[in-house]
Image 1 (tube, one colour):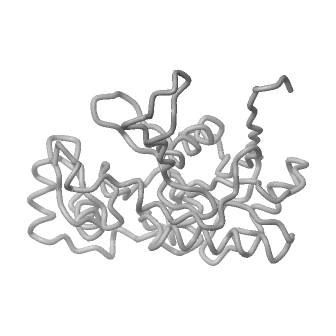
Image 2 (cartoon, rainbow, N blue to C red):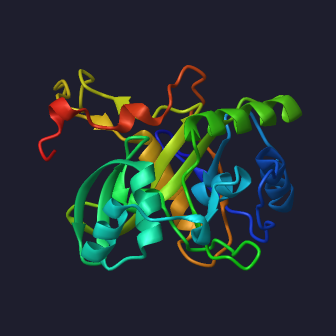
Image 3 (spheres, one colour):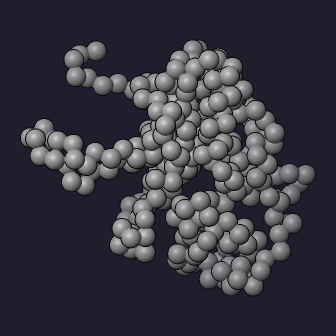
Length: 258
């Protein structure tokens, strides 16, 4: 590599098995690495789609078991959506940001602001013939850490793990991969005070590092029936002191649109 050049290696194994409740996600990563001929090294990063983590944790809910509240019925009337889905959305959220025909934006209990509180039915198989919806993991940071530590126990390697989902973004069309849980890499990197190439101190530059990594991985994962829920990455710095994903949420004091 030329002096000053930078590189990042990514691969998304195909043909991984359908994840079910109780499955060992570290074993899924190891199996994907074997399939892709990827020998794990310290410093590697493994990016997992939210759906496989939620499925392993049993976060699928049969809609037939849900009784909508009056608030859910009202929200369903506004949006034209299934009242049972709206009930799950409300249970997962701390506030409804905006509701219009065909769309509801909420603030999730984990702090994310996005559509439907992350409640989703795509690529969620029926259970005993009953239609199901999938909720986000209870604690994605804890899930990422548990997977990383299990991989270290089995391989001796210090690795980072990122759990990602697809978010829409204000003022832009299309969804993009974004991080909802992290271990071993920083959610944000604060460059304020660092000089630019002209020697000027940066004033505003805080990088959404975890989201940038998530977007890169999402290019390989895809958004439909690709069946690639794991991306192996090499070239990122492992940081054992990095906190979870909470630092990526803008505080109310600096949120000009809340």
